[in-house]
Amino acid sequence: MRRVVDACDGVPVTAKIRLGCSDSCRTAIEVAQRIEEAGASCLTVHGRVASQFFTGRADWGAIAAVKRSVSRMPVVGNGDIDSAETAVARLRESGVDGVMIAREALAKPWIFSQVAALLRGGPVPAAPTLGEQRDLVLHHYDLVCRRFGVERGTLLMRKFACSYAQGLPGAREFRGRVSRVTAREEFLEVVEKHFPRDATAAPP
Image (cartoon, rainbow, N blue to C red; front, top):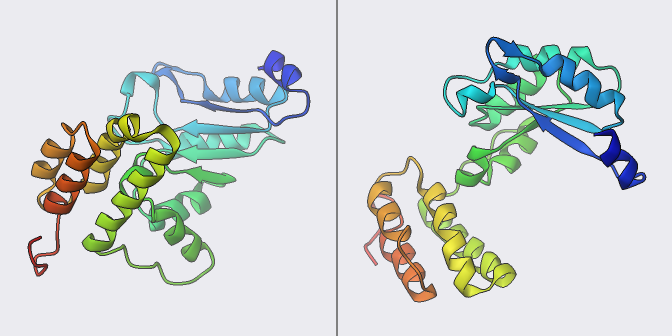
């Protein structure tokens, strides 16, 4: 970490860690302190040990302990943030300087505007309708294709489109179809015909 900080010559360097390798080998506090001493500008802590992968629940008590163990470096907490309400609660309860939203950001990218509204003291905006979500998938696809080209963008977008449909009625059929597309025309057709719809919506 110190070598990276020195090589970056003033450019902020951040790090992300888990709580340790396993429950019997939790090293997050020691590692966080060494990272701070090495000059890192910020640390993100995921509240699981490596052996858990993504099973079980994130330990936000352990994340809070890491925050208390450092004196200068901001600490960002990460793990199991599935709503705006959860994000704000974890932020306030743990004392961290920020929260990182990971998997939920792929399924519900509007969660960030919801968190911002809640932090301002306002009501949480409603999630987009399924029709609006479908339009968002198409907009996302357009942006990905502009960045990576149509061929690669289509392949990359398959996993993002599957994430958007997570938990929605009819998601299984949509995900099965969209995960196999290879061309722009296929992608657009699958999204138009098979992305989950409101029960009252007319079929395409």
